[in-house]
Image 1 (cartoon, rainbow, N blue to C red):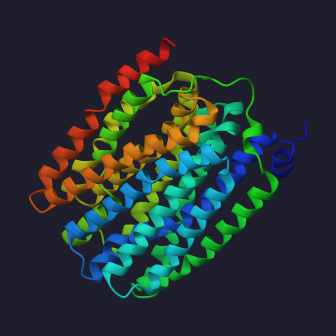
Image 2: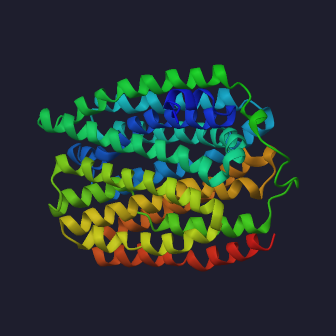
Length: 397
């Protein structure tokens, strides 16, 4: 029996699968760009004179805007139906901000560019996820978003590896590392325009009737949001983790991006595995994953290099699984014409918790690493009872 070539398999695939793969490749290069930059932002800000609190606040504010502003872009996309124009504008801002970091002469300018990159992501994510959800329904929300997130995270693995290589051969030239990321940024913008050309109306890809037709947001949505917010509050930003590695001399500067690449590889693999498992077992898969991910904090902040590597891997697993299962679980909870708004609202609350947690972790960092660890573990484990409640409610629907 002659097996079909991969190219022929893709050519013969359904339009929905083609769109998921197209957006996934687009996200591969986008994450290649901005995650490559995020792998060195902490040490880079340190070389420009920023301290631990400043780095944590910059990261937290960036994440707050990166999630909080999604409420407006999501609602705007649902009201106007201009999903692609809003998505494209966000990608332009985000992809321009990263290479411009090479020109930042002080940490204040770098901070503005870091925040601008997050604003760009906030603008494009809700309408993009809403478009993706229509295609993902055909293959299962968990698998559709899992495939997308896996490609996304593998891009996030190769970006830091490129940055690590540039730092190794250029004697830690951070400016050159940021400038090198202009290439994948340009590829990303080209692919966005191609996707817009071939899939002008992704909402037409949705298979079958809508899962939910009510206009409001169900109570289970808000319980799920509370659980995700607690988990987000316990996740330290990687720039602060990298800063800790530098201050404690746990991991050398050229190896820090490699650690980040490991986290992204684990994240991408976990997205595929647990996205598929979500379609079979439901949201209950988040319970053991949340418990396991909570162990990242003591390993990262209190351990040596090998413990730190294990902790970074768990950190990446927790982040990746949340990034894939969160949109997969939200999609069947709300009506299709409210999804961009729901994604914006959900991730807005998630980001608010993230910034509050980041500020708390930054303040505790100067007190004791034990306090940082206790806060992170407690916040994440507090999400487990709420996830159990969500599982009970969704299993009876």
